[in-house]
Image (cartoon, rainbow, N blue to C red):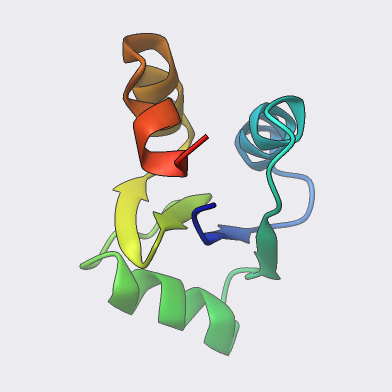
Length: 85
């Protein structure tokens, strides 16, 4: 199964939506709390190539973007392939 990392911020509805999708697919997720101004947020920005929004989602180390990108991958069926499920 793929390694999933997601940088989130407390109270973020997009973060919750992304987490709920992974939960519905019954896949393990490593959630990284990354509030604005934290070293974790800076790490997310660096890893994502400068994207400052949350969530930032990585599957097997590859950045796939945020919640909208995740939902688009799910809709197209590509997410299943990335998750190896």
